[in-house]
Length: 482
Image (cartoon, rainbow, N blue to C red; front, side, top):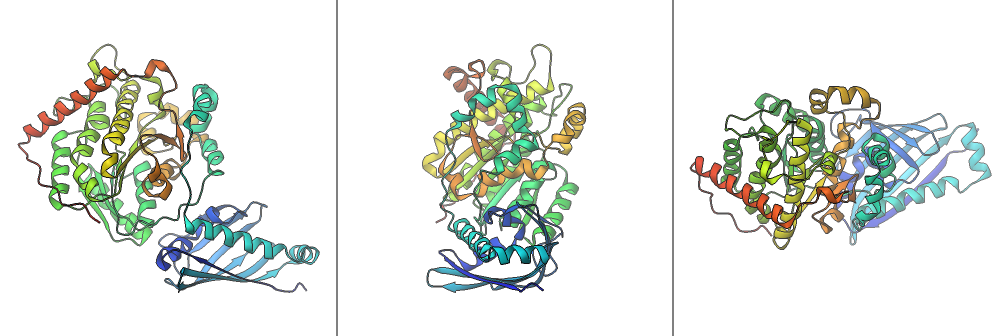
């Protein structure tokens, strides 16, 4: 009979105890810090606690089933482990230390026949595995990573059709994930506003941000769906600080009213995620006479972000994340036809041109607001299987469904840009899978300085006109928060 194997490892990190516990307690994130883990999946719903179950797949191919049997907040987690190779009890203890937090990992393994033979042949094998995992956890909690750089190295692949398209699939996500660093940042006390938050990318991002402790304001046009999203996110994360604001962001009167309500409330915004979007075929006008793609995808985010700038500045250090599309690579901004009224209308082209315009705004806001402590970036979620894709591009979905990403995979870079410590180090970039990519892959899509200036002037004029139509006057901003 094989002898039990006991591991007992301790690390100390310069990090608040509560933050350390919250990161480790979400054990589905073990793949971030344990180099021996290929992937981890939470099998149960709700916040981490007694009864939570996880499936952890090791890079060696072994599948482990974890069950939490004791859970003492900021103090202790005890899990049982079942696998074909061994059973185990793993205990993780947390306590304050002069340097920050002391974390102790105690595990008792009961090996089966094969693992018992392997450990007798290599007595220090399990010891090495434990040390490696704890080194990874220390690095994750120290959180001293630098942001990825050099978008030029992706330029050739983006220009070539097949490599570029593969990057948009789940295979591109899986490939990029191997290069990622852990994200142990917490968002407790941070206020994040997410538009288009009732389904798809927005809902997935909201779930992740809530689990990181953020106070959320979800924006959508359907009050019933918003209420359901709030309940779902609160139940899944254990985070009760989730609120809803109803607004149709294709109607500028709603956008101005939403901005006015938030300004009156005066709560600083630590991250604004401009995600709301849809693809319209055939060409449609809003009740205000604006082409819907332009209104929802470009003018609406412009007005909302511009008007909320005082709240972003009041947060001290804040972030704006604009959700774009790879389709913008095919289009140049048409300043003289922003509302797609000339020639034959294509919903896909109108969508891509609006996203091109939002990329221009990303670069402009990053330049203008850097001194105010506001970091602005844009991202591409890849091809994700969302309700929007299903309704707007049914033929595309049927063809590509086997390789589409999940909404959670599509939302990953949104969450990274909003939360990761190193993501605050760069701005004005276009990101895919936590890596910067060129904002243009062809000179044909580059706007001239005159076109850029004309776009900004046109949007500013429309913001003034639509605000005047609502007869509003902006309230005074609060002083910046320390």
